Image (tube, rainbow, N blue to C red; front, side):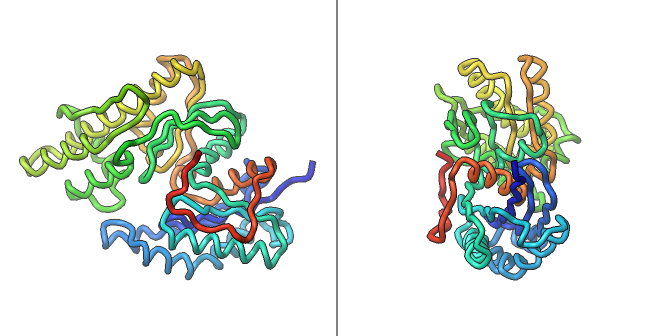
Length: 330
């Protein structure tokens, strides 16, 4: 069977990334141009600035990805790009660039759901992983518990009703004075504290999530007591937020009798969350997977991997492909 080389393009937020991946699992290059330093002064991503920066660097990032893969455009079989969800201006840069390449080079175009890309990051790190399995998608914009039935067949078992867990991390970090991006800063500071502060945990009859209550509780505590131990507050926040993830996962495993779960998304890089899921692995005798750190945050390798599985399953796009900022996974 002929090898299929996919050029992946990711520009949904503040990373401009281009990657070359062979057969969905072998990364030949994965170049990431991060805008963290640019947006740090604003305390978060400024959409217009993000879009302009994507335009400025996307061509050079693509050239570098091909160079690192020791390839030219002639060696590429498929152009895959993120077309949602994300910031509409940022998405349009990647989609427009991918469409231009597809037209000029006469290469197959494949639009990829960004969340599907996060799931596929696990296929790169864990070559043996195949559906079916559960996936806990935890990022700045999403908290989804998904049943991965096949490479292109998903069922959402539960999702957040308000804030995504990554959004809650960032808002908590901001209010206690930690720099952007807040998630890693909370993870680091929490190691110096103890989870001694009781915070609310929200549960529903189904497997949905809510993090607005715990976020508001932290904000109120910090406001009423500015001298509160910030390390203890971070440790307590991590504990309570992770408890909700773990309990819903337990319910899903019991209901579906599935013994494999993967973590995905930027928050899956959190060391405490990983530790708790590894404890769950021992407790329930299941297998837990998570991507290597570079593949947790936004990157084009995961988009190329998802693009490969779309391509071999006949899910290709044409030049009418457009950015969909609120794109759903199913």
